[in-house]
Image (cartoon, rainbow, N blue to C red; front, side, top):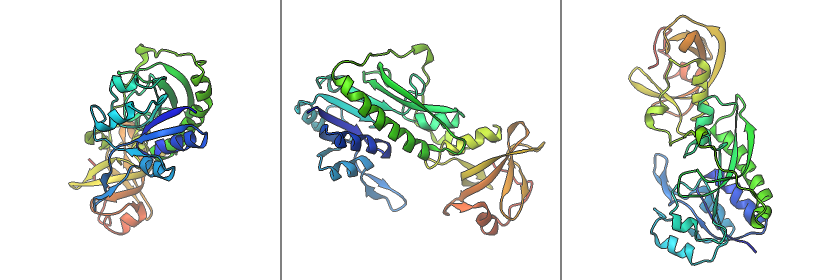
Length: 313
């Protein structure tokens, strides 16, 4: 029986771990990030992969930093055949990558060499791409630069956001891994080097990137909103207060007003001018200190003083 160390953290990783267990592979350890405080009450919460591992009665390791840790020493004494990672969230030392008999492979949520880094799903939606996918690659010291073992694409629908794409890509990654592993274990998979001239990066989203730039077209603003939902959530400033924008709709209407200007308000929604004369409807939003609201709820409550001509910054 093939002995595997699995390393992953968010919900994206869970179906992949479940698939390995269900397929009969022996998962010796699951390595994930430490429990973190979550929400306003800062409740210490385990990563989704930890919860999944415990359901399978697999021992969980949670090093703050894997390099040089006692957990890493433990992993290297287990005699694993393979390390499988999926959105683990830490760099792995070269000595760890080389310790299993068959090395280490990674299930990555992009069509490498496009979008190396920690936020590939976010950037594929933010940039308005019409497709993304999953790449399973060999792991080397350089980030997401190893040879491609297999790759499949998925369309990005106009209604997709990070949450929906993570679910789709996770299931695709599970399918691909289970289909590939038997041939990989027998040495039948051909390595395909990545084309370095095609490399792009997707670093973790910064706070500055979360703010909406109304100079962009309505389609790109909508892509930014969907590319940051359900986390970290795009925002704008309104009357010196931060307002999160959760859901929008691109309209066919045009305007000559300055981008960011509120150009129409009715009983159920309001419209905002964007770049190149385009217009966006705001459907759901969240004022500072409040929960997520439908536009009609906002306009009947904290936003009842909003007027045409006001501005989002």
